Amino acid sequence: MPEEEELVELKFRLYDGSDIGPFRYSPASTVAMLKERIVSEWPKDKKIAPKAANDVKLIAGGKILENSRTVAQCKMPFGELPKGIVTMHAVVQPTLAKAKTGTSFLL
Image (cartoon, helix red, strand yellow):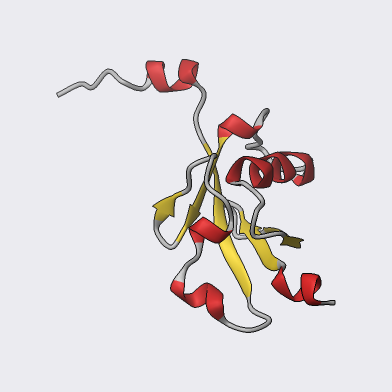
């Protein structure tokens, strides 16, 4: 049982206010692993959807999380609440083709 108490419960808030999760993760889980889970659990009825884990940005406590960091390294002050669920924001990055078309500005 002590192992289960160490797990961190996370949910991921999408652009429209809906959530994926909550799921329990080991503190040793990486942000890249979280992104893979998000892509696999992404609702099929959403207009905007990531095609791969690299299309997702995870934001927690106002900071974009790096793929190589672990859940334990991304601790936020409010994440210390007992039995609390930590909410991270999952944002789909625009593809390069879309980003390039929107770079010209008219004055």
